[in-house]
Length: 87
Image (cartoon, rainbow, N blue to C red; front, top):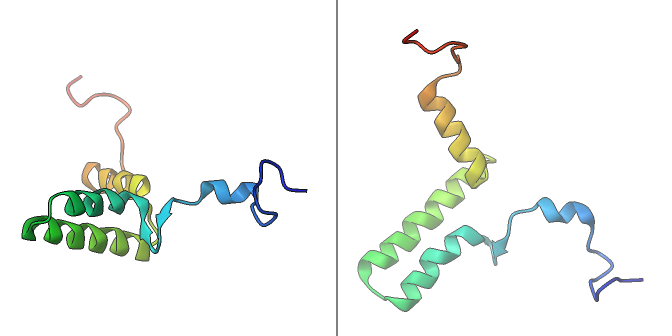
């Protein structure tokens, strides 16, 4: 029996999946919406660049928050000091 009119194929583990707008990550939908509201060449380029960015990080298996954490680790380094360097 389905609860709250959800189909039987819906499962609790599907809640961890990222939201999608057709085949594109839902975070890329904001530039698409911006392009539809303000149609210019530069907003079209912004949509293409953002879709490529999200496609590339998804190809490597990252989501946006995980990608930013990996980027932060790359710039800060893997070794963390237990005491501040100035003391």
